[in-house]
Every structure is written in structure tokens, then in C-alpha cells.
Amino acid sequence: MLIRIHKDNGEEITYEPTNIELVRYLESESNVKEVFEHILTLGFYILTLPLSCRYSFDSITNGFQEMKDNFSVVNDKLEPIQTNGTAAKIGRLAELLAQRNFNKSFPSFTYDNVAGTDKSGDAIINTHLSIGFVMIEYKNYNTSVSQQEVDKLYRDMDNKNTKYAIFMSFKSPISNKQSFEYEVRGDKTVVFVSCGGYDGICLEVAMRFLIHLHEVDVVSIYDKSYELSSKIKYKEFQEFYESLFHLSSKVTQLNTTIQESRDTMNKSFDKMMRESISIESDINCLLSNVKEFSENISTSVDGESLSYDKVVGLIDDKITNKNTNLLIKRFINLTHQKDLEVKADKYVLFFTKGSFVVCKMDISKIKIEVSFSPEADRISYDPTYETYKHNRYFIQLKGKEEVWTIMSDRIQNLIVE
Image (cartoon, rainbow, N blue to C red; front, side, top):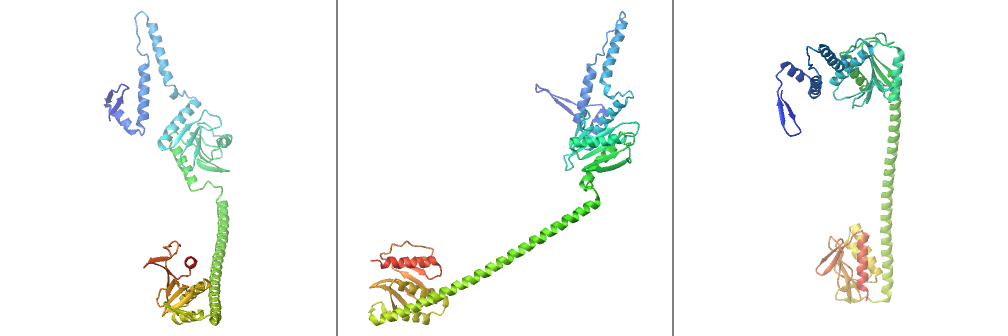
């Protein structure tokens, strides 16, 4: 074992004890720093004792007086361990021994000696665990500890708001208590130790037993009431779960109903849209037939000018897919609203305003597109729905309203003179 001491001026002093018994004693202690500090303090006090006496043959009486004074100083230093048979001093020494042994057994706990504080017990232990604070009451009576002392402990626990305590009697029994037992009074739990002795073993066992009581929840009042409480809580939880499950089922059913209703409405809207387009197509056919009576059919280099019903007939003959057929007819209705003529060159439809070809469509292709001339067109290009190639704008027919808005704007922009 090597001891190093650093002085304030930076000097370092090393010392290796040679006394084997001293080395063994230091190595056996768990807190060497505290023990070494006590040894240094005790040695310092001994060195400061005025033991040197200057005796002279002429003043022997003064020499004896000086020796008496020296012994008085030593007696004062040893006063804490001198009991002289006094019960109070013996009890105080017992408490010091109990504290020392307790700190060895529970080094992580904080031991606060409050023996001098009224209505606080003799010690308050902070366990730093879920059990919290524990009060300790020591008794070193020669006769049995009375019930009044037990009641006083409970009052002290109320005063300090402490729920756990240990009542330790070093050498006498405790009234109405076994040698080792615990008691639950309200929300407070006390472990009683009778005739526990001074070696600290019973105090350690009491503390560990109290922690065990807390951990296994034995400190809750009675087993039967605890079981009843558990059953009530379980029943409440079961009822809550069933209510929540019932609500969840109702929400699921409501979502299903909403989905079914939405599907039905979508189908209804689709059906109405188809019927509307079909009706508009029929109306345009009738209008076209009426127009034939008043106008002559004109031709141009782009092809033969067709009446509305002929255009619809051509579409029905060529396009068998219902959705595609419906989209083309919707576009035909749009051009009819814009007062455009339709001319055909085989399966290519030209939509004209006078001699100007506004747009065209090839219905022989799988993907039906409408192409627009960029001439005099001031509509901005929308890359989401349009393609620009061969100096023309191409828009694929789809059911999205954004597509129809773009086509309507382009037609309107191109036919404005």
C-alpha cells in the first residue's frame, strides 16, 4: 500500500506503511479514505496533548498537577465512548455503532442522524429507491418498551410524512410485539425488532425485509380487499374494452356505408353523364338534320363536310370501346357548341371555322388525341396534359376536367377573329 500526499506548494510526499497490522486493517475497510482521515485526526490530537512535563526536584507538586491536567485532556478526547454505565450514553454509543454498521450494509443509502430533532425519530434514511424515505427509532431500555413509544413513532411518521419505519430495541422486548414482526396501520408500515443486539445484523435484516414488503406490495392493506379491488378494476377495464370495441365496430360499419354510398353516387353520376352526352348528341343530330334543309353541303380540299349525325354514326361504327366512344362524342359536342364544322378524310376528322382548320383527330388510332395548330394561339403550354411535337399541340382525350378546360380555351382562342 502506497500513500501519496500533495502539498500546496506542489511538493509530493509518498509513504509506504511498514506496520503489517495497520496495512491489513486499512485493506479490510471498505471506506479507506474515511478511516485514514480518522487515524490522522486521532494522531493529531494525541500529538497536540501537552504530555511533556518539566519536573524539578524543587517543584514535584507542580509536576503532578501538570500530569493531572494532561489526563483531563485525554479524558475529554475519549468522552464519546465513556458511558460510565449511564443508560443515555450507552444508548448514544449503540446508535453510533448502528449507524456505522448500517452505512457498511447500505453504502448507497443516505443516513441522516436526526436524534436531536423533535418528532423526527432517531434517523431518516433516503434509500434513493421507490420505497423513498425510512424512519428509524432506537431504544436501549432495560425493561420492555411501552405501547406509548410505539404510538409516538406513528405520530412522528405523520409529522415527517413518512410511510415506512423500523423500530429497533437493542436489548429489551417491545410491548405486544414478537421478536421480529411488521405492522400495517393505515398507509404506514413498521418493522419491529426486539432484543436485536448491537452487531447491526438485525437492523440490516429489518431494512431488507421492509424493502421486500414494499416490492411485493404486501404493504397494501389486506389480501382479500386487494383481490376484491383487483376484480373490480378488471371488471371496469373489461366494460371499457367492450364499449370501445362496440364503438370501433360502429365506426367500421359507418365507413363501409359511406364507401358503398359513394360508389353508388359515382355510378349514378357516371350514368347521368353518359345520358347527358347521349341526349346532347341526339339533339345535335336533330339540329344537323334541320340545318341540311337550309344549307348545301360544301366540300374542300380537307375532305367532305359531315353533318352531326353522320359524324356520330362514323364514331359508332369505328369506336367500339364505350369510354372512348363517349369521350369522342363529348368532344364533338364541344366543337358543335363552338360552331365548328366537321370534315372527314377517311378516319381523320378536321374541325374547321370557315377555311381555317382549328384542330383534327384520327379516330383510327388506339390512343385518341386532338392536335391543335399553334397559329395565333396565345394559350400557355401545359406539359401535364399536352405534348408539343411537329409544331402542333397534342392533347389525349381523358375524363379529367382540366383536359376539357384546356381544349375549350384553345378552340375559343383560335376561332376569335
